Length: 118
Image 1 (cartoon, one colour):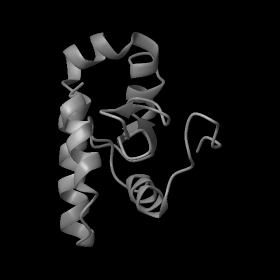
Image 2 (cartoon, helix red, strand yellow):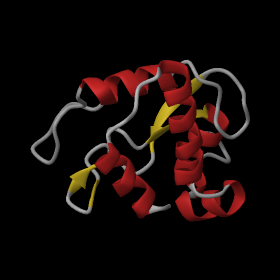
Image 3 (cartoon, one colour):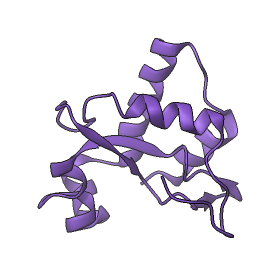
């Protein structure tokens, strides 16, 4: 995880717990094991004046994260055209998180992430 800077704070307990849970999930694109947590918009990202960067994360296998066809290699727009919006993948993970843990993530942050919509 990134160290806190003047632009952001470090992840809080809810965000750390969610990211920790994501590390043991299969890739949300391929279903393969061995993922890393991808910050969909950067850890310091704010939308509608709400910090969403630490919560807006999905589990991606190396091939889809940093590999030849990864989002950081080909760019977010081409990746989105192939695999769909990251927010839809995120929404599925949030649903599974709630189902498995019984924990609801903060409403205002979730609303801001879904409103961001990429």
